[in-house]
Length: 285
Ligand code: ADP
Image (cartoon, rainbow, N blue to C red; front, top):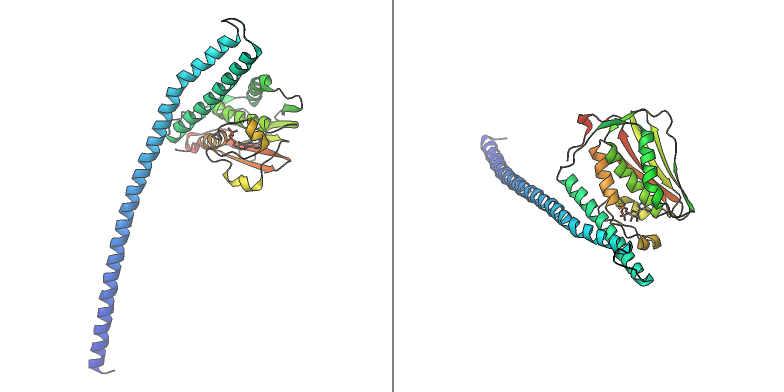
């Protein structure tokens, strides 16, 4: 190659290089701008989440007083404090009372959810025996076991050590699982069990012989406000918040939730938690 050709080729390469450099600089500027935009959007999202949590917390809190007065007034009326009731009046008052109770559950779930989202949930760990937790749950559900065709069975845990976690939060998760199982089981058993795993975690399972959940609903079942359409669903309105709340509480306790279910056969919901909750295993929200 002659010197002239070489110089021309070099000039050509230099030109190409500076074009590439200009392009790169432009790309860089684009990336920097994108980052800034992402940052701004993340900030907006954080702000929106905070506003949502605060709104939920205020709203739920404000709703509690009127709901409590509905409940106490209906109690007074049903106790015939103000005189006798006709059968129709009693029916209507019971309807108000049931609706107020449902409303109250919904408000409590929303308040809990807002607290979890705002990272304001306190975890109170203590040592406790599994059997005590099971017997408290048994006592809690005894008054609501109205269907003689469904047995609620607590299996005696075998070789279970004392647990060190937040027993009230664990109980809240199990209450959700058990009350769902009872809602969606017309006949058969609801069985609550606990096993110690090799990795020092404990799995609590609530298995039912109820209506089950169709495969296409499996992916979304732990999301907020999700309810699966079924004839039983119409009878029990619920909030669709219990499972998502249970999932978040389990994560706060360093654990996880899961389930398996077959339509028409039944479902098993479980929660696995460290048998001893150490601070470094507590999920940050
Ligand atoms: P809620 O019970 O208030 O509707 P959840 O979040 O606890 O809300 O449950 C969400 C939905 O998941 C329920 O509405 C129901 O459709 C379905 N589901 C939960 N547990 C069961 C179960 N054991 N058997 C059948 N369906 C269930």
